[in-house]
Amino acid sequence: MRVTDLADRIDRCNAAIGRTAAWAALFIVVVQFAVVVLRYAFGIGSIWLSESIMYGHATLFMLAAAWTLRENGHVRVDIFYSEASVRSKAMIDLAGALLLLLPFMLVLLAFAVPYVARSWTILERSRETSGLPAVFVLKTLIPTFAILFVLQGISQAIRAANVLAGSDTAGGAR
Image 1 (cartoon, rainbow, N blue to C red):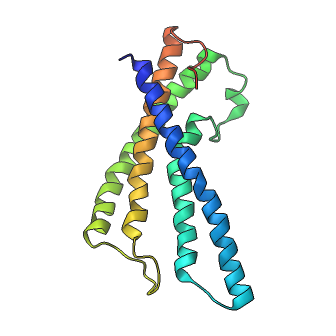
Image 2: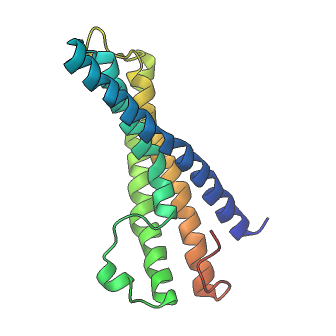
Image 3: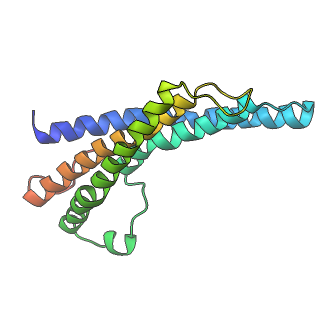
């Protein structure tokens, strides 16, 4: 297997997870609409429904973030990057992945795993009596986010290294 095949697989995996997580946006809108209708039309409040909106937001943002990086949707200092040559962009991408993204995500992962493990050990529930009983599942999104970002950082580094090595001038097909 070529190294670019690994990058392609990572990209496809993150794209599939991101596209699936994007459906959480529809869930958020529908549930928020239901909360508003129940509250203002019928005078009924629901902590369970309100917390499920928070779970939807967390799912959307934590699982789609690596896909957003893959699609170049994250904020950059475009003053420099947009006018840079393909080779300069590859150097910036490689340095960003190796010196910033990967170390930060590995530290996040190192801190998140014990935190999430404790939550799973006690099967942590909502602090609210009628809240969702799956806070431990929600917290699992933190290391999942870090792992997806590490994988996408590896893919980004592979593609940038290929450009710098002269193997690829466009940064890889997406």
